[in-house]
Length: 241
Image 1: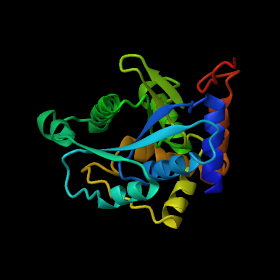
Image 2 (image 1 turned 60 degrees about the horizontal axis):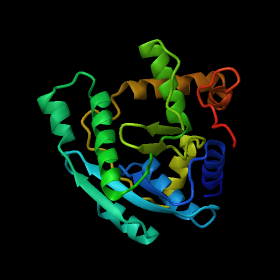
Image 3 (image 1 turned 90 degrees about the vertical axis):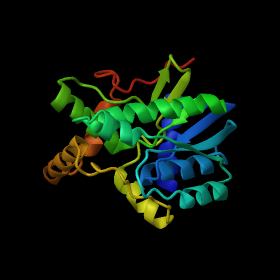
Image 4 (image 1 turned 180 degrees about the vertical axis):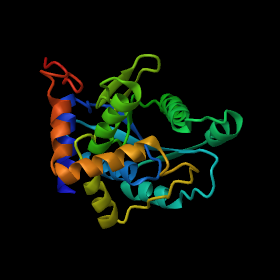
């Protein structure tokens, strides 16, 4: 966990993610990323200089099977309350709307449901499990499919809801998450989504894998480009007071 906590601490310090008294909700989908994030934030409470509380939030999307017993057991082990919200987002996306690009609408609806649950629980921050590779893939998706240079920011304040989204694993490589999920025996739940592994993001991931065969440190350099606020400003740090 040393590398995981080191990356989390650096992200927290660089972007002022966690402040005293924060009530942080962790979006736990059952995937390796969100489960490691939950585990790391639970451990980080012991080392962080400011006190904060955690809540784990899980949405069901109407797909079966989606067993949650392992996630709930992990939450009890970590002393984190687990809140489950049942939805029919899958039915809306695939049956009612019949979306040609289902991932975009699904992500938007999931984020809205998580934000609503945050507000009900009195949480002011929502922690998401996006990692370094997600940020780079989002950058490539934006450039190749939208014609713009953009990716998500480690900290995003949503003025309409009053919720601040944070991504504490933004510096952590995906390969390390895969390793830690195996070492910790995290209760990963396979995604029941019918289009899982058949997405544009999957294509971009494969493109980056090919790029790294020729340029082995490509992902590290692309992360440096995101952090180069003097030139690009994509991941600008908050002004120090």
